Amino acid sequence: LLYDAVGLKRLLWWATDRAYRAIAQSSCVRSRDLQAFYPKSFFSDNASHMTPPGGARAFDNKIVVTASFDRRTDFDLLEVLAERERDWVIDLYGSVYDNDPATLRAIARLTKDHANIRYHGRFEFTQLPEILGNYAIGLAPYRLNEGMTRYISPDKLFHYLCAGIEVVTTPVPGAASLEPYLHVAASAADIAAAIRRIAEAGERRNPRTLHERFSWQVRAHEFCVPVAQVVAHETRAAG
Image 1 (cartoon, rainbow, N blue to C red):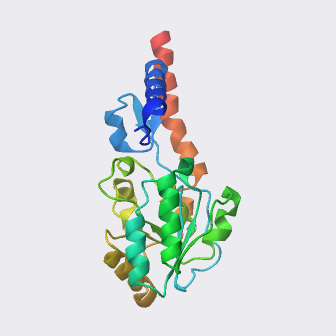
Image 2: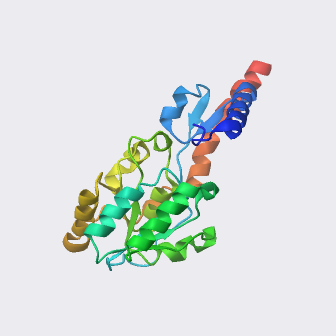
Image 3: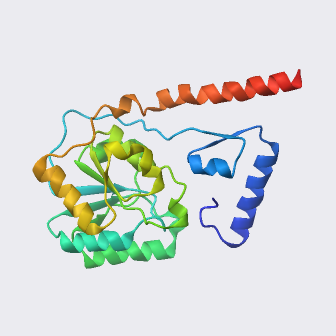
């Protein structure tokens, strides 16, 4: 819940969270499981501004990973995948959260030891359509059985889906509601097998129409419903 913060930062975040809970009439959460911690909350899912550009791309041995890299990223999984599939290139895009030294070292080690892993660094949000437009497959290599991935609603899954590319992800809880559109794989071997089914057998799960359902415009309309209910309840209570 506190993004693995420690020390004074954790104390400040905990105090802020407690203060908000005390004064707020309701709150919005991105994970249904978080409603156990925030009884007055309502659930609103993630979304994306992305749209699919033209037709579906063929797999050209390149895989994209966009992220705010931190302890949630399974770098060991990426290493095994790169080692076993040396003809595939894994392109990493994104900043390192809080410039965490361990994460910086992990990325440096991967790119040094594996020529088929390339780190492109931080990108501007406006560049995301262009980046994803160059790929047929997006990968979400989240660590499993990790507290930091227990309650996430991954942005990248929505961005990949709305951009019209195939999505391979590890089975984190936040992927469950999207599972019909995803290729879920827990190990490097399973990920490689899923990618081969996409590339060689044409197995596609992304209908390339999900941008119509998962847009922020749609989500905003959905969001207004529970907000109106909270306002109406508080108005009745005050009257």
